[in-house]
Amino acid sequence: MLDTLKNSEVYAYPAYYALGYRWNTEDECDFVEAGLKLMGPEVAKGSAARLLDIGCGAGRHAMLLAKRGWKVTGIDPSWPMVDFVQEQAKSKKLPVTASVGELSSLGVSGPFDAAICFMDTFRFLLSNESIHSHLMAVADTLAPGGLYITDFWVPRQWDTIGSEIHQWEQTQGDTTVRVFYVQHPDSVDPIAQTFEDELVFEVHEGGDIREIRGGRTRTRLILPQEFRALVAGTGRFAVVGTFGEFDLTKPFTAESLSWRMISVLKKVQ
Ligand SMILES: C[S@@+](CC[C@H](N)C(=O)[O-])C[C@H]1O[C@@H](n2cnc3c(N)ncnc32)[C@H](O)[C@@H]1O
Image (cartoon, rainbow, N blue to C red; front, side, top):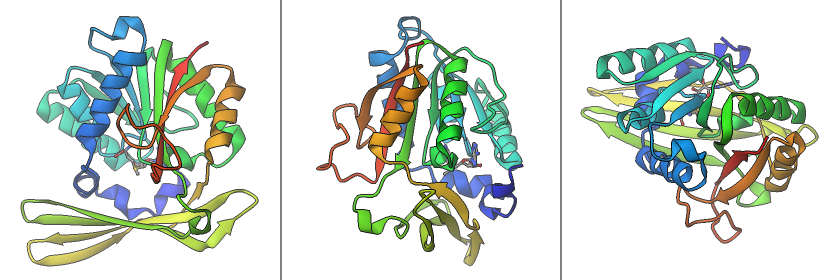
């Protein structure tokens, strides 16, 4: 397991993670399917597509897309997450495999028609060099014309960099998982463009309340123009679209005031 994950208790509770993060999963999977149909490789448009899910977490996209006929490979550095995805795939008889892997060394060979890296996982790449080598590794696993779709937080206002807090909750049966995403302003490094953020789960279950703290993790601020420059620098991808929501009709603009930029890259070489 990566050093950054060793202290992160939230990754040891995949079932709570799966519940806390399940919102919007249908829309996100619809977006991937529509993107592939519109912009993906010709061969994948009418058949079961092959997907690589990077930082798959508890497998919410993997399971849903597999249910819709995709063949999915998930990688995640956290063993409990990988075990959970494997168990879910087995019990639901879905074509999903999962293994330990991470952004810098994917540890899988393709070809895949598409790869996804969702919910800010891309921001664990802290340097330009690591972003470059990650993009090169993803391109190596994709079929010609394959898509790489990723999303990451961008500040709506520059004076909120490093100090945003987001909160949401999801309920199933008698379990509610309240998720807090917290950025720590005291940790901002303006030269490295990094800061620490943290996930905290407040789990309400059967009358009990418990708090599971994710621990501080250093993540990177990536701005839209530098992302484009880094992608161009690989010579392997073209940015075919950036979106403010998981909706191909909603481009990423200043007016969208979105907190996440969703990018669709197409392998060109
Ligand atoms: C916010 S979750 C997103 C999970 C999933 N993509 C989703 O949308 O539900 C971040 C995931 O990234 C994984 N992760 C952390 N560091 C990583 C790394 N260096 N490479 C790949 N995944 C990483 C964590 O284990 C966790 O499952």
